[in-house]
View (cartoon, rainbow, N blue to C red):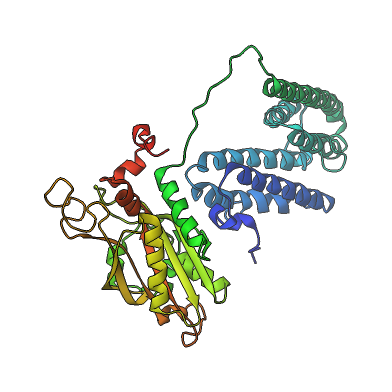
Length: 467
């Protein structure tokens, strides 16, 4: 029965390997495992078992690595995994070769001995050249000169001691030459590594006092970040906490737990981007369409009272234009406690709006629909550009509110009792409200910006206007 705990039976994605350092560690662990198994098999004179397990046809370790770690590897890791596998196969083959006697290998005449040792020497040179630090070098030194499982030990035991009288002399000479070569190259590599480390340290620590000072421009927060901080400060001042969450979410947290089941029509308005995952991934993943999933995650962890705001970037499959973008920013809020009423909700929102736009603005609610709130409302504010008159200062219709005197800000409402069922809250004992604020829209309204795309163009002429 195959060992299901063997990491080579899993893909790199299933092992959580996503960078070259973690990949190198996995191959290092395989080398250590092979050494142990070969040493044990050699004591039992059963090296064929190790050979079949690691390099045999079919379900061998090297074959599984080729499929699970190379073919199914993320694109940026494939060439690295391929190279590591090639090095591992050579590492295994050399040690399987020296684990056999010359007779088992089919070497019966002296002329064939020197090419065999040349092959071993070349393999050593490639391994030692790959050593980049003292740790790598120490491992290679034990691999080749170790008294219990070093390559030279295996050659001594399996080639020299078992050689026929006519081969023993040439094997001994080649073995001594190989030992001298290995020891000298390890020492040379050690000196090269130390010299390189010393030169790197000197270069890092060198300070040229003759160079003029560097005058660096003082940066500032992006306008979106400034609006984030202003809104966070307002809500923190009235008892809310700030929580953040992942931008990559599961459909459960992004939809189902918010009372948006599969095939619900509202999902058409939240069409988003799904990730291409490796085969065998346990659940689909998507770029979140709102920051509401963190409201569910927060309620799963905390019991009422809960008062949080969730700032962050969100994604929807919108065609870019002056008011739409596939990536934008939101702050969503949630308050849950006993006896929270619509009046509490109204007071909270009005306080925020007057703090953000100024005390002169007026507010109103309009009935609306959202799957996760009931009742649901759209929140409007009197146009701050025309003073709520619908007429521009120079006459004519206000271009911002289109003469309506009101501007839609965001949607909100009382939390639908169905949502509490997903977080094990008792809907008969608690109540609360939730709201979702588009940061980009608020920034455009407050600072008179007419194109959302300028937030993402990194034009310093625009950014310098908001120090």
